[in-house]
Structures are given as C-alpha cells and as structure tokens.
Amino acid sequence: MSLYDKSSLLQVPSLYKDGTLVSTIPEDRSGDFTVVRGSNLSATRIGPDGYIKKGYENLLLQSNQFDTTWSQVGSFNILGGQQGYDSSNNAWSIESNSTAFDRRIQQSLSLSGVHTFSVYAKSNSTDWILFYNGTDRVYFDLANGVVGSSQSGLIIDSKIEPTSVTGWYRCTATFNRGISFISVVPASGDGNSNVLAGNSIYIQDAQLNQGLVAYPYLETTDAPAQGGLLENSPRLDWSNGVPAVLVEEQRTNDIALSEYASSAPNASILYNETTSPEGLQNAMKLTIAGVSQAGITTSNAYVSNNTTYTQSCYVKKDVGDYFGFGLFQSGMPINNNNYIRWNLSDITIQPDVQGSYVNGKAEDAGNGWIRLSATIITVDSGSRSGWKFLNMTSSAFKSSEIGNSFFIYGMQAEPNKTSVSSYIPTYGTSQTRSNEVISDDFNIPTTATIYNSFYSDVAETVFVFDQVFNVVEGLNKVAIAFSPTAVKISVGGSIVANATGTYDTTSLTNIQLGSNNGSDYSNAPISGFYVFPEFLTDEELNSLTD
Image 1 (cartoon, rainbow, N blue to C red):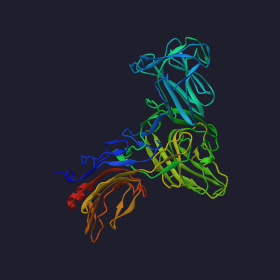
Image 2 (cartoon, rainbow, N blue to C red):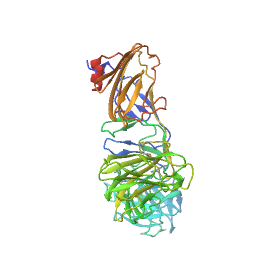
Image 3 (cartoon, rainbow, N blue to C red):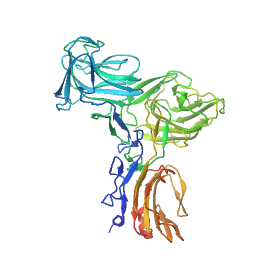
Image 4 (cartoon, rainbow, N blue to C red):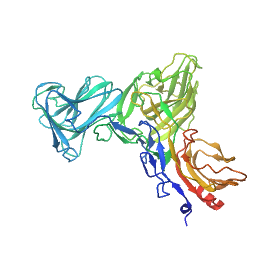
C-alpha cells in the first residue's frame, strides 16, 4: 500500500473552479476547499508558461447584438446572420440610411481610465471603419489592413490584426480618458466622418476592457462578462516551477496607473513596445532624453505622509545598466532625497542606497525581466514628490544618460507593508486585493498526521504544539504527527522535534490554508497539504519530507 493511500485528505493544487479548490481525496468532495477573496479582479498569479495571469471584463452589454442596447445616431439598417470571422453566421451588417456627419451606432456608458475598445470588422460598400468616443477618433482601412489617421492626443495605441478568415480584422484602440459612449462608424474614408447613405460594413464581437491591449473576446448579454482569473478562483501560482496555491493578505496598490506613465520628465514613453511579464505586448519603453532624474514620476497624490510603503516594478534593460527608485520629501535625511539603485547587468550585487530605502530586492522574472522592490517610510509632514522610477549612472543617483532605454511594467506602491506581494494591476484608480480565505470544514482526528509543503520567501522559526523548527527560504516540507500525549515533527527528511506531554487536539474541525481565519498570513505558496488519520512512523514522516 502506498503511503498516500492512508490519507483521508490529499490536496495537491491542480483542479479548481471559481470558488473551489478541488482535493484528490476524499472523492466525495467533502475535502474540497472553499475560496473567498472578494468582488474585484485585482488579483494575479504566475501561470505554467511563466507569465502573469489576470482577470478581465468585457464592460459592454449585448456585445454581439447590435440591434438592442446599441443605439443609433442617424438611421441604420442593421441585419444579423452574416458570415463572421469565426466562420459562424454571427456577424452583422450595418448600413447607413442617410447622409450626415458622425452617423453611428453607439453604446452609452460612464467610465474613465485606461481602456481598450475592439471590434472584428470587414469592409462591404465602404472600406473604412471609425471608432469615436465623443472626443477621440481612430480610422481603420479594412481593404488594406492598416490603421489610418487618428484625432485627439489621448489615443495611446491603435492596431488592426488579420484573422484566419480573409477580409476580417480585429480593430483595437486604447485611450486614457473619461467617456460617456463608445461607437462604430461606417466611414467614407480616412479622416472623413461624413457618412454617406449606403455606407455599410460588417462587424462582430465588440469588447471594451481595462488595460493597454484587447483581451480574448467575452460574449455579454445584459451584464458584463468576466474571464481569466475570476474573483474567487484559487490562484495556482507557478513561480517556483510547480503549481502552488497562493494565499495572501489584503494589499493595495496606491499607484492608480500601474502600466501607464502620466509623467516622464527628461524622457519619452512608447506604449505596447515589447512583450511584458504578462506575455502580451503591453510594456512601456522608456527612452532617456535628459541628464537629470530622467524616468517616470507618478502623481504625489499616491504618496501619504507617515506611511510605510513597499515600491516595486518590473524592468527590462534595453540600453544602459543602472535603474532605481526615488522619492523626495521635505524633512527626510540627506537633503530630503531618497534613492536606491540596481545594476541590472548583475542583480546579485546589492543595491546602492541614499536616504531611507531598505529591503532592496531584485528578482528574476524571466525573459530578461527583473522585479525590483524596496521599502521606505515617509515622514509626518512636508512637501513630497510622486514615486520615481529612474535611470541612474554608476556614480550618481540623480544623473541619467541620454540614449539609455528600458522597458517598464507593473508599477506598484503598497502602503503599510514592508515586503512586496503579487502584482496588483490598476487602470485609473488605486486597487485593493482582498485577503483570501481558503478553508474546509473537515474533521481531523485527535490523533493524526498533517503534511504541508510550501515556498517561503524568508527563513524563520516556527512554533507548533510548543515545538520549534526552522523554515528555510524556498521549498519546505513539514510533517507533524500528533496525539493528546505526543508530538513528532519531520522537516527535510529528518525528525526535528519529538516530545511527550498533554496537547489539546480536540478542536481541529476547520482547515485554513495559509492563514488563521483571514489573519496572520504566511504568504507562502502551498504545493501540498495532506491529512493522515494516524500517528505515522518516523520512517513514514521522513519519507514525506525528504
């Protein structure tokens, strides 16, 4: 008999659905864990391909029913049942019945921040489609598959991508502004919003999602639809090469635009320039144009007085080696300026610091990306800058080198915390990822063995049943056998505690992974949790943890 056949609960993170982490044993599902995190999509995880996985929404209603929630400005003949980009008959033709400027079909909504609008389209009597949101205009050439002209300065990016069906394209436009509607126009030509009677195009599957790129299409009816990492999905994180369930305390990203730079002194920004840690082409390129503190500076509204912050971002070098963080506040040491600087060519070298930054850390995030993080405490009062993400030189924190360039993604500032947590994306306002509670009402006998494997980011001492053992940074395997009169603990293939006495083991009726009823979080991804309804032998304990 295999040792695992003795288990009454066997949790190896692999199977899940929204709200449930499925256990292998018992098969009657009584060992499945309930997952509760919150009501937004601010959580992320690392997938098996090494890329960040997010949740997202299609914020439009009736996303492929253009004769309902979509209203007409002017008169249109709208006909469904047309052959689409996916070889279905789910496309629509829209044909203007009159001649006038800005004749369109539109959907009313109220939003602000960074969003991307996308529609699949094909030419019919006219070759041009126009996206219009009341201020911004972007034209697309459906005959040649190219982006036309745009009007307004708040279009961040626009693109047109062919599908597998000839003549069909996915057209996308990204903007950062408040809008009250989004619309599609069968335009007469590039830069020409005068719609002629008879102008017609085919369209299918409209989507409006937060962020700098269009995510895979989600069909909606009378409510927005969600995809990717859902609100209460367990986060199976592959940061360490195997699936481990990530359980974290509540955290906030105070930087309201984590993937977009509202200010870049002495530098220029291009968007969607390379593949980000998300695996999509939505990383910024920062090019240095001046010699003094060149980089990204956020609004100072994202910085509060008398607060501990952990600042972080993902960076990838293009030209130049030195990059770091900065924060100015009156009343802080060394002329009110604080800096921390890393050499991206060798992240094993400890960062240089001026001022109050501590806990500087650089982590390899794959594909040339490095996640930098550091902690700083602001003072009680005094004028202050925003968060700075800067090119530096080897000899001067304030100096930059013209022509250097770096790719940037995922800026973050977590208040009241001294360590970095998983990435929290923001698109116009700060976001809070609620604390996770992963629990199962499962009765553990008063005599039993519990096994837990997890990845710790720190080495520390742990106390269980008045016994002490050490956790190392990285993978830990721990087995604890207990009864009302004895405790034995195995770590890393060896017995590290063996005690007798009187122990209260009568209240083990609810298992909570990674936390104590939503508090006292370990923040250590869990790769295995087993229960055996007996006090295992030394040999069995050590075989589990070896």
